[in-house]
Amino acid sequence: MSAWLLVALCAATGSYCLLRMRSPSQQARTAAGSEAVMGFGMAAMALPATVAAPPQWGWTLLAAVFAAGGLRALWQLRAGTRHLHHLVGSLAMVYMALTMTPGMGAGGASDGPMEHMAHAGQPAGGIPLLTGALLVYYAVYVLRAGATLVPAPRAAGAPAGGGAVGWGARPELALACRLAMGTGMFAMLLTL
Image 1: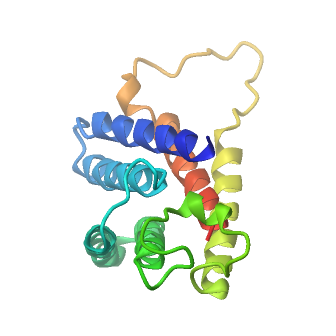
Image 2: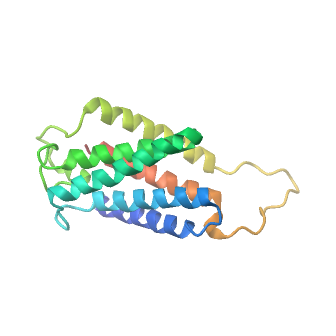
């Protein structure tokens, strides 16, 4: 059940990010596209193995897609640190995809991250120190993003609205998507 909830959350987030790609800002479109790929990639990884057990090349292909995204984020880092989160996310996806590749993970070819919970007697996949560092990163990220979404108190008599902004261009919705994906990433890393 938890795997299906994660699939639904990530697929919905990826779909919203696709809608955000209609923004007039090139920077916003690029970020939304990267986040859409991340959302759909996470949804694919969270699918229960009983529904869709990808072949070894499927995990390798997914790792290659996110490695390319990581290289793009690394290139964009020269313009500022705002792309650091995309780089960490891409590298975390590469790490999880390689961990699920047959011969590298604990459960074997058909396991997704949520199935690792079912293998209580087997050692966890991945590198514990790297998994722990990623867990700490995503825990801090989720807490900071969640705190940012808490509305600030308004002064008495201040107008409630922020102007006529389309629902697809609202920064708090974009942050909510990032929060949802960060939470999903944390949940998937917990299962490694």
